Image (tube, rainbow, N blue to C red; front, side, top):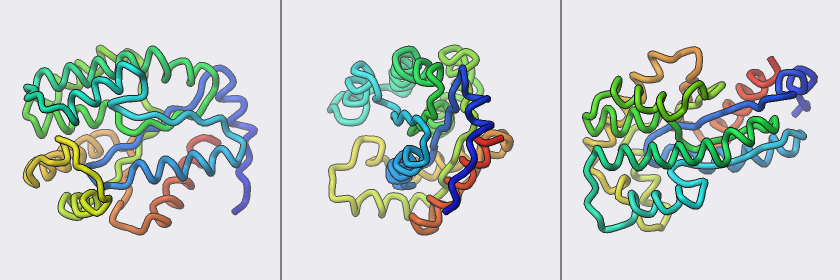
Length: 221
């Protein structure tokens, strides 16, 4: 594959990096995709920082454990606020510093997940949750977001084949995951300039090549 020119990248990212987020339901393949993109972009000479939500920071990992793996029964409102606390620390501690250093930041989940899961699927209200996300993030908006779309049933089948214990979110009923997908599709429809919808039912290689090509085009411009 021909190595992309990076002259425009070096100019546009001299003082600020490029923020890419990846969204999707359970089993969409985000983690595998991000790993491969990190490897390839690093090989091409880009400075890449990979992270995830919830998690990424020491505080975030504790929040992740609390939300996804603890026996605690957490209300929808408390769940939302925990995710936002994680994001506030994440931006402060890692995302903004990485962007200020001119890095390409690859983030597994961000605001769109919160709006889809808590705003839509948990019925807290998409506009209300979006407003809270904006309060936490300020002017920070991803340069581009890839939404990996897959039927909930197929996604859950993939997740269960990974031979690991499913987290509390993954253990939700299929109706919940269907609502999450509906939420994501509404968000993607309303943000066509930022969000690129990717058919995650395709093979891992097809998804990787599709997203890599889009990233190279976005960064170089």
